[in-house]
Structure formats: structure tokens, C-alpha cells
Image 1 (cartoon, rainbow, N blue to C red):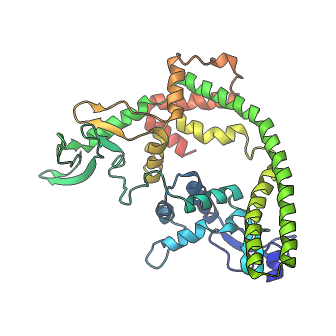
Image 2 (tube, helix red, strand yellow; image 1 turned 90 degrees about the vertical axis):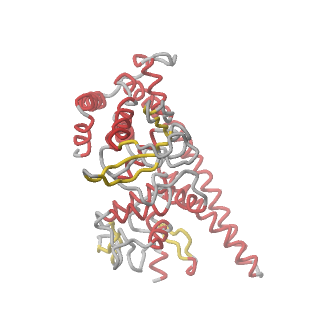
Image 3 (cartoon, rainbow, N blue to C red; image 1 turned 60 degrees about the horizontal axis):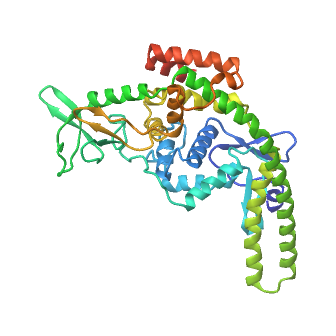
Amino acid sequence: MRARAANGYWGFGAPVGYRYEKLAGHTGKVMVPDEPLATTIREALEGFASGRYETQAEVQRFLLQCPHFPKDRKGEVHPQRVASLLAQVLYAGYLSMPEWNLVLQPAKHEALISYETFTRIQERLDGRTTTAPVRRDANEDFPPRGFVVCGCCGHPLTAAWSRGKGGRYAYYSCYQKDCAESRRSIRKETIEGAFDELLDSICPSEDALFTAHAMFKELWDNSKASAQQAANEARRELEAVEGKIGQLLERIVEASSDALVEAYETQIEKLAARKALLSEKAAANGTPRKPFEQSFRTAFNFLANPRVLWDSGRADLRKTLLRLTFKRRIAYDRLKGFRTPETTLPFKALRDFAAGDSGLARRGRFELPTPRFVVWCSIQLSYRRKSPRTATSWRLGA
């Protein structure tokens, strides 16, 4: 089993998202992605690495919502299982078995994520969360709760159901004792209807989307040369790291102190992690993993119509929209409605493009957008003009 692990084969139980299968060109069985579990694991890991899921608890709730993810006898996903999933290097295509002196051994099975993504996950696990996590009691009844603040005192509005003679009614209100608007209820339909109008108002114009696409395309083309240079630098550093590892191995053979051997082994582990990351960058050779249109499709879908995420009905996507769209919490006045929000940089830049006073070059000075993007943008904007909810069903059903 040790010799098989040294050759890159995992000889124990397959983690969630993999299954064993006999493939040509391999001795014995090898792990292969087990769909649709593999896609779910990939989304959870990449979501945590990118910050879409701020805490392990959010990853736990995401996995709990997936019907095909295995649950325990109580129908739950244990937090320890989430922690083990985030720390599993097998998903990055490597084996790590210190008891057999195997540190980041390249594996034969297909990786679900890149080693760079795995590194970001470990960095986030070692650090502290800097943004507010999703509420544990977040539900579809009051999606903006916790993000909308009182326009009088600045504290987040709370929300609850109340029972009257005609049935149950939903209200938002401020419960701060020293606030002038304390315990003054706002109907759920009023505040959420105003929020829908606010989302529609920040949607960029067609000219702004064309300008943004042209600028991103030009930056994408210009970055190819720098990416190639970065790959060459990664190869040179990789050779230096391999040389240092060789020197440390020679020192271990000559060392007579156990403490010295342990110190050398610790340095080798750090260099092995750096080697894995550099090998991945050098193998990419400065070539993007996906073409431009495929890489930026999701971003432009979101920028063209943020209501797509909001109307999806999923609590995690709605929280993602709030983080990506607004820089800070938004204030609501009971009499005047929502105050002008401070949006994030992409929406702010697109608004400046539409205003025409940014002083930047116009679309004619950039490379013209590709025909595919022109067709997509026209369809997306035409659907958005008809009805945001019609656009939602069209995009989600695609």
C-alpha cells in the first residue's frame, strides 16, 4: 500500500465525490469523480475559497440543501464532516501521508479543484472572517433582513409575522428604544417592493455593458504576455525550490540530531507546498483555463440583470447579490423609502460610463465586441425591459 501511494494511487476509502473504477492504463482501480456529488463538492470548495460562503456553517447549510449529498441518521450534515472536506488535499489532486514520508505526492486521480484554490481555503481556515456571515435563521420570508437598516438610527431592521383578525401579516420594524421610529411597522410588501425597484434602477445601460465588455477584452489580451512571463518565472523558482529540497534531504541523511531532522522535515513540507503551487502555474504556461467569453459570461449575466439572483428564490444567492451589489448596508426611511445606496465598484463604474462624464474613451476606440456578445446582450436587455421575472426564468432555464 505504501508503494502504491508513492506511485500516486489512493488505497483507502474514496472521499465523498469520488468512486473507484477500473481504467485502462492504470494498475488496479483508480478514483474518478462521482457525479453529481463531484459538482456539489467543487461548488462548495470554490465557494468557500472565493468568499461566497464566509464560514463553515454556510458551507454546511449549502450541503444540507443538496438532496444527493449524504446525511447522517438525523438527516443533518455534521460540522466535522465539513471541516474534513475543506482540509482534504485529495480534492486538489495530491496525496499527503506524513507517516509514510509522502508530502504532496501528485496523485493519479482527477482533481476537483486546483491546488491554488486549496491553498486559499487553508488560508481562510487559518485566518479570521472579516465580513458578516449569513444569519443562521435566514429564510425566504424576509430576504433583506439584516442588510436593510433603519434610516433614523442606523440599526438593522428586524422582521416578524403578526396575527390579526384577517390572518397573518408580515412587518419590518426597528426595535431600538432611543429611535424615533421605534416599533413603527412597515409592511413587508412595501419595503420589498421598494427594494425590487432599487435593484431595477442600478441595472446598467446597453452602452455601458458594451463599453465594459470592450475594456475587459482589451485587458484580457494585454494580460497574456504578463501571464507568459509569470509562467517562466514560476519555472525558474520551481527549479530553485527543487534544489533546496534536494539539499535538505542530503542534510537529513548527515544529521545526527532528532531535533535537527525534525526542523529539516518541516522546511521540506513548506517547500513541497510551494513546489505544488509553482508546478501548477508552470504547467498552465500562461494559457487561460477558459476562453474570454466563457470566463466572463457569469459576471456579465449578473451585471446585466442582478434581479436574476434575487428572483431565484435561493437564500444563498440572494445574500451573494447583496454582497456583490452594495458596498454597505442600505438605509430605509419609513416615509421617504430607500436612500441612495453605495454600490460596489463594478456598478459604480458602469453608472459613470452611462453618465458620459467619466472622461474615458468611448466604445468606438476599443475593439468591437464579438458578435456572440452583441446577440447575448441584446437578448438579455430585451428580456429585462419586458419583465425582470421573465428574464429570470429565461436565464435559469438555460
